[in-house]
Amino acid sequence: MTKYDVVVIGAGPGGYVAAIRCAQLGLKTACVENWISDDGNPVLGGTCLNVGCIPSKALLDSSHHYHHIKHEAAEHGINISGATMDVNKMISRKAKIVKTLTQGINGLFKKNQVEWLKGKARLIDAHQIEITPSHDTHDEASVVETAHIVIATGSVPTRIPSAQCDGKLIVDSTGALKFNEVPKRLGIIGAGVIGLELGSVWNRLGSKVTVLEALPNFLSAVDKQIATEAEKALVQQGLDIHLGARVTGTGGNNHEVTVNFEDENGKQQMVFDKLIVAVGRSPNTFGLGAKEAGLEMDERGFIVINDKCQTSYENVYAIGDVVRGPMLAHKASEEGVAVAERIAGKSGHMNYDTIPWVIYTWPEIAWVGKTEEQLKSEGIEYNVGAFPFIASGRARAMAETNGLVKILSDKQSDRILGMHIFGPNASELITEGVVTMEFDGSAEDLARTIHAHPTLSEAIHEAALGVDGRTIHI
Ligand code: FAD
Ligand code: AMP
Image (cartoon, rainbow, N blue to C red; front, side, top):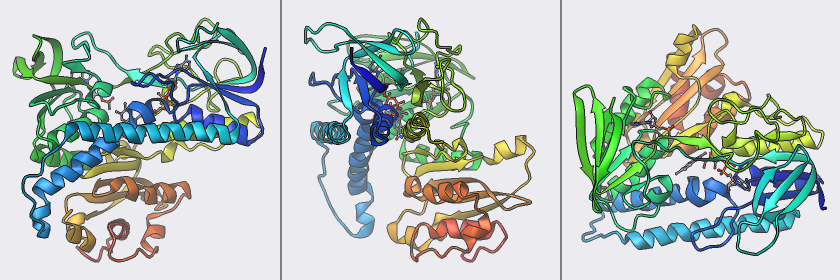
């Protein structure tokens, strides 16, 4: 029987990063992965590379270019008529990007001598894993022995009985990444991150998009001022967002879907050409044998871990979407690195207070730390500095003036407690807030930092000055 120092289960951004870091630290490492791509080949990369972060951003970028050419280029004096979208080309471009990146992980595994065990893993106990080949290789199931296990089996789209996916008219996020034409009427259940990103893609390409969201508030986890601005912008772009609308059932025929929902006006019905179910994601432990092997699971199906990511067994770790915390690729990867270092006898650093969040609508929504509402409810005294992009020279030059930067700092110490951005390239800008918070920095630290002119980041500088009432350009 082959013996390893570490076997990682799952090769998403949590698992593949953990495996590479373990190997870099001199541990004999294998990674078990059973994902089969649409063209029938085993692939690495998990949700993020195959059906998540990367393909969704590829479509967001393509649709952004199209929308810009159609609706905004003229403002720059660029007159283009007759621009059309070749949806199949857009989808095959996305597939090519996915293939290049997933093959890149193969290369990284080879370079770092991580052994890829192709198949589905099932825990036998805290040291043994059974691997059933996922491909029709006629290979027998085998058992490997290991000193440590890292479970990184990720998550899957949450299913709801009122809208069961048929893969044709009713799809989950994976199906919504490969429509071969623009649906005329597109329904989306769930105004969360995934629903809004996919809704933006198809709205820009010409779908009439309706979003049905059960909660009464838009993006309730986001700072309220930012969420209000974002909702306004998305509605202006054409998204029809119904809040307080709980979907109760679906019906229809071979060509269209009828969606029944209830809102403050009672029972309602709408008809769509396609329906995307984007009601969140659930931890994936299907067939893993976690419970049988003695691992504690919580009532929602997450594997229970301590603050070092150890499960009920100290040599068995779990990371990423299958455990508590934000379901984000970079959170999974950072936990992967931290766990690898702990296994190798180092301390392993993970700061849950500085995980950035991004929603890749346009403008983008990004934040780190606490919202104003959280600070109020926790009774923390704070100062606020804000700066709108309309007053930024660079934003004007780009014709991207919608949005603002908002900084919240502790009233006593001035330490930054939260940064919230709605605006162009917010996904890149937020890193300034993350770095400052990681260094326990203050608004004054940012205010004293020279920012290049003209840049969008000057809005952060101005917001930091604003914490102390010293903003220059408003
Ligand atoms: P996963 O990426 O889900 O990987 C788990 C892997 O484990 C899979 O490859 C699976 O095949 C494998 N596996 C499971 N069970 C077994 C088993 N028993 N044996 C062998 N292998 C197994 N996050 C961001 O940070 N930014 C974004 O922009 C973003 N966009 C997203 C867009 C969409 C449409 C979706 C769906 C998600 C998005 N996410 C985004 C979330 C992100 O994809 C996840 O947080 C991330 O992939 C979690 O990483 P993970 O390693 O925990 O799990
Ligand atoms: P997220 O978890 O960010 O992906 O968001 C998923 C969203 O779907 C949440 O805001 C939920 O409130 C919403 N949701 C869940 N179930 C339903 C339902 N039956 N009808 C409408 N919205 C729903």
